[in-house]
Image 1 (spheres, one colour):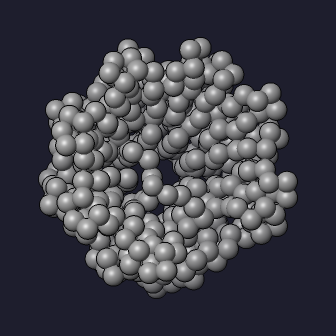
Image 2 (cartoon, one colour; image 1 turned 90 degrees about the vertical axis):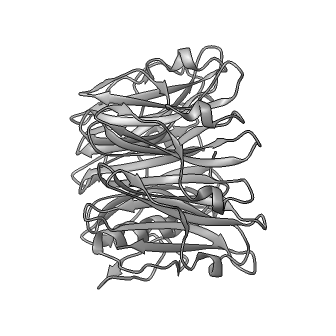
Length: 430
């Protein structure tokens, strides 16, 4: 399932959450975050959010926001998003935080901003000032290729069309990128084949050079229904990553898959074990993957049960082998309305992770939950403390969870207040 909503409010949560996490926030209840796009932390408390420097000058059309943020160390982050210029074109920008201060947002250099429509979906930083961002754009020819843009030693380079000819000029995009170290990243997304079917793809960067995009091995055989995509990639070390997403089986119903890269070589995609038994309603996918060491990862996603209700699942990988997916403990009791979704997972070490998502209560209101894994055992999901009091409008979601190695996590998302205005919240775990 895709996120129900998106907007500028993502910028508030993601950037503030990243800075707060790395500086040691210790609050345990949901709190509102001020509107804007920059957050910081002083002495363990949330700083004041403010507009991303430079975006006002770029965003003449009045529709902008941060889509992704990544922090290599405390106060050293990269972010990417979009804005509309005076002609109403959607263009892409990048911005860098150095030693706790955000620089000025800049238009992504290169071909991506010439056709008037750019979607920048993901950014990841392997070390301070060394990041990669990716997405898709509409070229002057009308084609929609995938692109990447690298930052080296604090300077963003020129965007480039993703190497390879998988999409045959028809359309492609990168959904997720993960950098284990500077210049060593892996990314995943989808491309349109010669029959205009959507296929899953991956690509690896080694020492600052992006290789040729390739179809996910084994995915075409799975994807009988012609609709597949990588949703999430996570790299524990350079060339050792896992990815997850969905494909359409012979019946056309979405199924969840996972695939692992070992020493720079991608293995064969396989249906996540156990999801076939869970997914009686025929709609499953992996939404997020997190790896803390090679071959030791967690994946979360959703499926539909025999009643057609969306439920949340988690699956663990140990020493390169994926275990059996299971419903996240406690979500069945929460999810009386039958619409649960887990959107993000983050692991501090193998078998120690936190995840978050949303569910509908008995009144049909969307509420948010968090759940923690300790030493390989998942606890019971619980409503985010304080979120129900904020969520007067009855529609909340978690957009991202991030955990520091010390086992302290932060999560961010949004909710509707009593006036049905979209607001941002953040919550931290110690």
